[in-house]
Image (cartoon, rainbow, N blue to C red; front, top):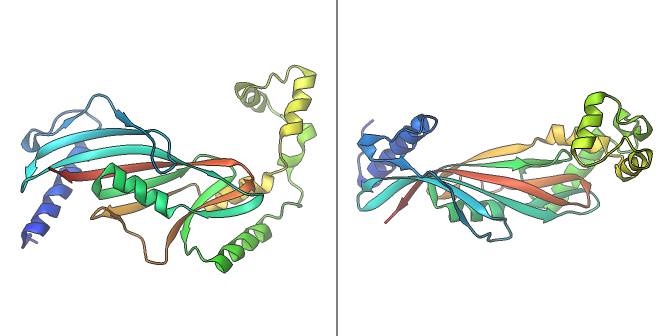
Length: 243
């Protein structure tokens, strides 16, 4: 179908621009018809809204109706200090802030969990429902149940396990350091299992500069092994419009 007004035409052009850049991104070649080029280095801006430094890659294009269209690839992080046990946090506002700062009008945002005992989900953030979710997770994987991962006296078991511990800074060839490593390890097998069930990432479309989620939906960070400082990665990708 043909665009019938200037707003639709503008959106149609931006979407074509987005598709063109995504197709050519891997090769690094410029798209001559749209006069696009990719910056060779990311520009870094200071953290805002409690997030760490933001790295942005962009592509610039020809003016569209007085506006210049381009592509934006922006990565930032959110940190949250969690509570004991299973805690659930609404991070929707921080995600919206990341999209607004990136200046993306049409695209998507990917939220990635950076831990093995946390998760990311989208649902209603209502106090009693949050308690239901917490109790539901406890029933799925009770902390008191027997788990092989919690047999600390038998860990690390394989050569691969030993190498991972060594890579993370513990010289377990020394008996004292081996015991120190075991002493600081939590009994958290249930948390790892719950992280697998909840999921580690969410991808949300962005249209008109806004998250395409329902009015009752929220993006939530779920920590199954608090209290700790937890980090979420936020990648915003899409088309921008500016003067």
